[in-house]
Image (cartoon, rainbow, N blue to C red; front, top):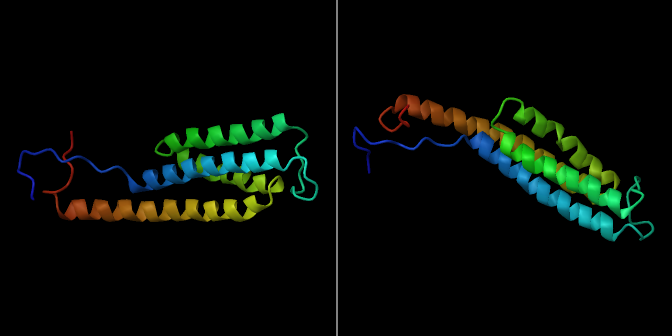
Length: 143
């Protein structure tokens, strides 16, 4: 169904921001679960990584702060510096592997997912803009 000449077309949300936000939110869940693992294995010898957090409080503090930072950054990806901050926070996610060694693998997968979401989202946004330029009758109306 084609829109009538006076119809308002809802503008699309940027794919890059949606993909990046989703990736950061999923990483927040990952950090919460890794924190649970670190807490559960705190007294089991030979099951931790090279960095040993001294107490349960420090485990929850580090994991909780990192999870909250990821959630906050997931809402900031559309702002200037949001993608840079999202990229910087990938380092502590990977560094959590020093506490829970499996986080090197899973965190690495999320770093790859972050890079793919930024690149693929940007490409989708460019293709949408090119399509809208070629087909102004279906492009979102400007206010």
